[in-house]
Length: 301
Image (spheres, helix red, strand yellow):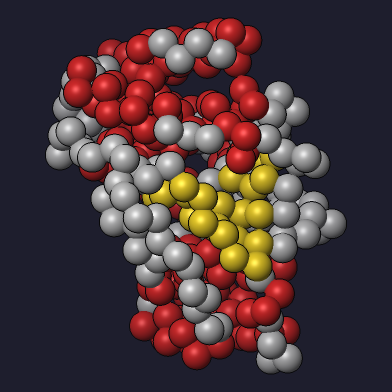
C-alpha cells in the first residue's frame, strides 16, 4: 500500500476534493518528446532515476537516499530475523509488515544467479553514476544504467521479475536522451537545499510508504513522464497528500523544513508547473490533518 492508494480511496478522495480548491495550473502547450516505444512505465521509472542523477550533478550537496533497486536487491533470496527486519524498516522507511510480505514472495525461490545478476547491474550503475557526477557526460552507459535500475524496481514494488532484465532497447535509450536534453538545468539549481526522494518520517510508515520525487528549496515536485500534460485532480490530491504528510512527520525527520509550493515536472514537455500552498490552507486545515492521520491509522493499522 502507499499514499497513492490511500488518496485514491473514495472517502479520502472526496474529502480532499471538498477541503482543497484545486488551483488553475496552465499546462504546457506542445509536447517535445513523443513516446518511441510502448514501454511507458519503464521509461517513466528510468527517467525518474536519470532526472535525479542530473539533480545530484547540478546540486553536489543534495541529500540522497538508497535507490529502490538497492532495496530490491536486499529482498532477493535471504532470510531476515526480527531485528534485521526492524533495522531494514528504519533504514528504508518501509513498514515492517510490508517487508515481511516482500521477503515471503516467490522471488525468494529464484536461483542464486538472479541475485548475482541484480547485484552486478547495481554495481555497474553505481560506477557510471559516480563517473557521471564527476564528468557531467551523459553517455549511453549512464542512460542504460537507469533503465537497469528501473527494471529492478518491480522486484520491490510488486515481487515481479522483468523477463528483459539487463536488456535495453536502443529506442528506449534514444527517448531517454531526448527527455534529459530538454531539461532546463538552470531551473533546478537550488539556492538553499535539494532533497532527492524525501520521506516524511513516521507519517511515511503510517500511510504504508510514501516518498516525493524531489524538493528544490521550498518546492516539492512530482515528475510525470506522461503524454498528457493536463493537471488532474488526482495529481493535485497526491501533491496535497505529500504536503499533509510533511506537516505530520516533517521531511526526513526534520520538522524545520518548510514547503511553500508544490509542482509537477512534465518531462515530455520540459516544463515545471508550480503553485503556492498558502492560498489553499483554510481555517479547518488543522482539523483536517488530524482526521487524515486518523484515517491513515485506520486504513494501515
